Amino acid sequence: MEVEKKTESTNKNIKKANLLDHNSVKNILDESVSDIVKSRGYKEDVRLSNAKLVLGTIIIVVALVAQFYNKKFPENRDFLICCIGLYVVLTAVMQLIMFVKEKNAILFTYHLEGSFTSTGLVVSSKLPRFSDQYTLTIESADPKSISAGKSVHLTKSVTQWLTKDGVLVEGLFWKDVEALIKKYSGTGEPKKKR
Image (cartoon, rainbow, N blue to C red):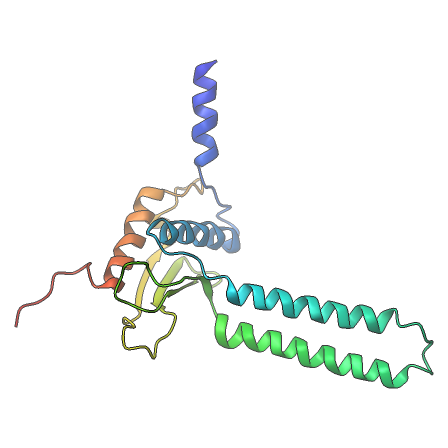
């Protein structure tokens, strides 16, 4: 009975991906990266997500008002044209935010409390289709800031972190991501003497 409970509790912590679906693999790795960065003391910055939710809600309200306006079509033609125009403009703004600001970002953070930097992190990842090369990038949330560090990249094959059954070997992945965070913060490599 106790053996079953132990195996159940260890099975709950296992992260498994479908190796034939690159989105599944990327999602498992992205979730783990997010957990690792948050465990290092960085707090997630959800302001952009909240702004997108508010904008999306406004878009839905515009569409509902256009749909259920209490006049019939010939009478509400001008109103419908305004609603359609507003819908198109707001949707374009939403896409612009996603294209310009979000890009491939999986996590935005506030600056680390107690550190000298005044910028948070933007953690982004790429896993191209039909490729096993996962690229993780850590950069400053405000690259123009004086305290912004240089962006750092890690590119490795996902086969380094996943077993043939699709189980994530968290210890190896954790070590690589933590080394990348240390490299970004400047504590990962010894300083060269001049």
